Amino acid sequence: MKPAPFAYRRARTLEEAVALLGENKEARLLAGGQSLIATLNMRLSAPSLLIDINGVGGLGGIAHKNGKVEIGALVRHAQAEGNELIAKYAPLIARAMPHIGHPAIRNRGTLGGSIAFADPAAELPACLLALDGEVEAAGPKGKRTIKAEDFFKGLFETALGPQDVLTAIRVPAAAKDTRTGFAELARRHGDYAIVGLAASARADGKGLKDVRLAYFGVGATAMRAKKAESALAKGDIDGAVAGLDLDPNDDVQATAEVKKHLAGVLLRRVAKQLMEPA
Image (cartoon, rainbow, N blue to C red):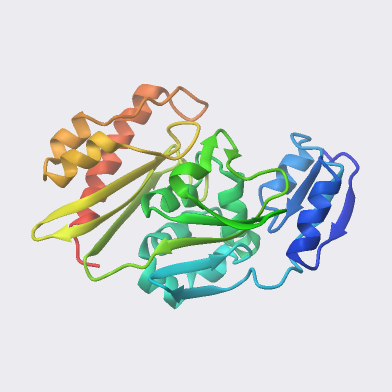
């Protein structure tokens, strides 16, 4: 299929992009376009205007500052995959990158676009949640920061307003005691996950503390399994698996029962990763 007709504007500044969004209530932002173009072609989305933000400066950087890693919205997956700062200070994101789509998709897709699209089966929203990260957005009243816990509202729904532009994501920089884990199960490498798990924790002697388990592919958003987190922090892996507080629905990938079982399989794998030194 071909997309419905639409107008095209190329924004040069954040202010221009925000203003254009205010002028046209049916506008959509275009960054990497790896999700948007597919929905346009299937006519699942039919905006009257596409606002291209690839010419907006200041959105393509990666920096380590103030104890956090800041990644600009226009950073491509392929850039992040090979970036030394991300490998050192945001190792969970580095672990997740090879699982995202295929090389052609990673060459064009952006981190900001993946977070803003908020696909419940995507890797990066779960990573942001597992790392207790935050999103920076620019709107008519300037910039504001939104915690990951408050950002993902529902199926493809976020806390971004109609005139907001996601400008960056930030996650706490990894320390010596930081531990991360990541695993997913998909029918083919590069497909959306049937079930996936992104996790972070801090080493506490031979155990763990501050455990955060963020599942994806099991609900309308990425979601934490808090009861399992508590059990894992006590060293009770069997209890964490048995008490997994997830309630997935059947979908075209698998039944709810299968998803719950696979979530437990992934928890055991990721628990082993969390016990390994970074």
